[in-house]
Length: 85
Image 1 (cartoon, rainbow, N blue to C red):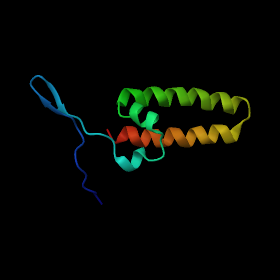
Image 2 (image 1 turned 120 degrees about the horizontal axis):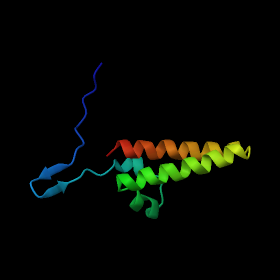
Image 3 (image 1 turned 180 degrees about the horizontal axis):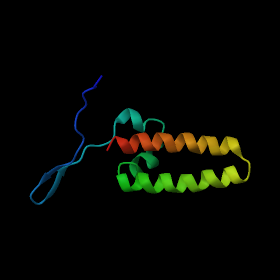
Image 4 (image 1 turned 90 degrees about the vertical axis):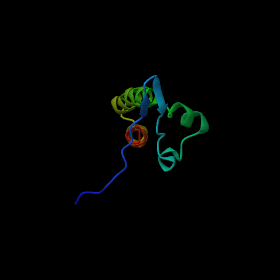
């Protein structure tokens, strides 16, 4: 079936954005304070995901699969936070 959800868009006035929803607090759990500050910006999230993907691929190339899997899981959590915007 269809699950109703709130619309998560910025409210815009004639002169700019007046309210931007922040990501769900539960999605931010497990990140350090410094990381949480970075993750409040959608562009910061995208940059961090790209950086972690590069790291993950390097670990996989070096046959460090446990490290690559850890980064994969972290990327997945960041993508969930990004969807909260």
